[in-house]
Image 1 (cartoon, one colour):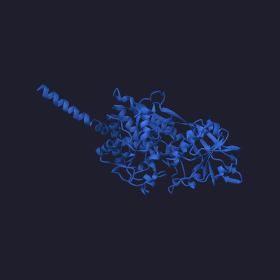
Image 2 (cartoon, rainbow, N blue to C red):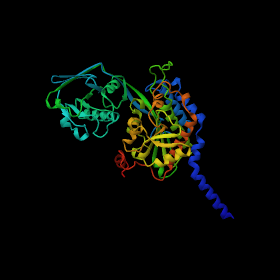
Image 3 (cartoon, rainbow, N blue to C red):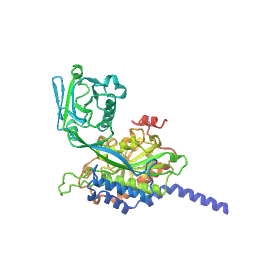
Image 4 (cartoon, rainbow, N blue to C red):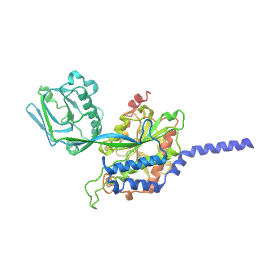
Length: 488
């Protein structure tokens, strides 16, 4: 009789254990709490959480307070929940000209300035193709203007080109180069759009690589049109009116230690950006505050909810909960994080990002990169448990994988999809609210959000408790980088 009772209890406990992650996710997500968090972060009083702004600082303090309330700890090696992110505002130049022999190239018509100011006179060229490290040697670069092609020859994303350009500029400067001109030719971002973007005040990371001391431009010219290099003409460059103002922002980072003696040495990052675009032109209703409910108060609170859940009932793997600043300025906070991670990157086995533009199908969750990692089935299972269909990105033409913080992790080799609200096309229902003043908390479907949050939290638990860490699907663009990072 005792043996039968023991077997029954064991069987019952095994069933309960198999249901624990789903039950925990279901029990910890509360619609009213979701509404209160989003209502605060996307309130008019926070004025759109621009980077930098008083509203963003208030949001950061609010999120820090929630980590403390939930028992989420500071990350290893950190003595604060705030990770400093040095930034600078760059005021664009008012005038500029490049002279090559008899040819005169004009600011905005022919070139844009990425960094620097002042003048260079009668400098020689060095053509470095894509400007890879092997192409940049001191004996060729020192004292010259380096000319290179934008990008690396593989990525077609101008957003990635910006990051690559910063690395090239840093290298050229280290080797004693006097300036950097890159040849820009992209169908993804036409020249007139690029000019419009770079002709306004920019916020960028202050990486200490330049203080306006080296001129760096993008020239509206294809790689096939480099005849000016063959003329042996020297170049003179003059840039006037640019200014730089430095400031500090912050990522918010929390930590929950895993329970498994071995697996706790592996970390899963749960991430979202908490900034938005601030105050802009008033709409037809006179509303000029861009509240950013969908983008990305929803994502921020998704991760906040996961932090509360995992802190209360820790899974096997350790977790880092990272809320990024400056995403809207060019994924700045996430770049600062991966370049200065409190734990070694090869210990971060997965990044589960949450970011949103909007939704048009409340029966779905759209995961940007769903089919690119081996966590696919776990994410599908988690969504299905709460009545949602998990689908892959239906709007690949938008390049969404490369437009959110996840790509900073992916570029390092870390598997990193983005969990988004359900959309089947980037249509008028999305653009109605995307970066619009009307994206207010009272326009959200909170019954849908409850399912969405539960699905994310359940997926977090499945990934953190899985026997084997998820990885890239073989053949993916980042598969080889992952192999190198984890020494597979």
